[in-house]
Length: 240
Length: 298
Image (cartoon, rainbow over the protein chains, first blue to last red):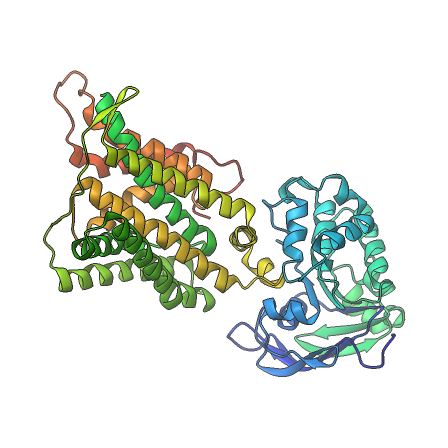
């Protein structure tokens, strides 16, 4: 929380895929140097919200501000230049490009410093450095997720949006991914994340929103929501 | 036999140009542009008209390429691109481009009539090249096809545009969130493919000696075979597929039919082409030269 205005501010966002809206009047904010989580049951519209913020679908109402600048309705390829990096849940790497080429592509909108940025990221993700000439489709699930994160970070984004980064990974890798996300947060990035594993996510999140049926339901510090009987009963479950 | 093999090499080079252009269009949109053949047809007409006025085969070649590029760009920006942005399924776009194909054919009929247009370049005196008998025209066609293919591969593998093209082709959404303007990359790719296909239309017309408004469509069917055989959307495999299909198509009719004697008429070419296609799909649905775990129709 280094500056007063949030890095990402979404107000009253409504969006969908042409039919009835999937998310309606959703408002969230994410600060730099913090992890902000969006949790909620399947079909709550979490992924749709992220796509609308990232410019992949056009919102029909509401506004999105990045670092105080209105970016509502900008297409994805322009939004990345405004400081928003988005890492999709699936298909999040270019399968037939090498690790290095994937990172090159991540830095496509950079005017300079692509090579230097790759070297920096190789320090954060040493696994990738060791196999930089391997094609992404030969990587394990965990390595692939690391590459997807690194690709998003190529633009040095103030705002990093992650769609279920640990989905489908072995527990060992899930821990590793969270370690990296914490490290990214520490570099003054606003991390906005949605996750299936609600309990783990709430443990890491400084602030979390509960989204139900496409609308804001609750919000609060992650740990506090974890202690909330209603949240745990409805959206977290006792066993996970 | 060797003579037809020589012919086969020329046919294969033209086929390679057409197929690699088609595969570029496919790769960047993931839909088959059924009106691809009309780019060749327009190229042939542009070459013919320019040649008549200027008397220069080189200017005719450039005109064919440019006309092809413009037509392909128009196909993308007026039809295929908008359909993709509105989220149309590949089947819908397939049908739409088939319609586009008929529109272009019949527009050409209105302006030029449906009759055969004779278009012959002086092929020069044939001479022996290794085991083959080639005319200077044959040699120029093969050499230009090789040169164009090499330049294209350098563009795809070395340039920033080439990398963006591969990125869009592999994952359009991820390319966009990486800051690549997918629409602009696709439009540029269509223009590039159109340059190649327009030129291919010119050399095909010159090699065959005549053309009609329908001639590109017939060649498109063979192009499709070559592209699918090689692995749709994959440039290297496509060129290999084109060489194989092109040679088979020229050599098969020259072989005596076993037991019966006599030869198969070359007018069965299309039947052969689709027989090859059927066999490839049965045996290697991903194409002959691909290892990725996806079929060409995914």
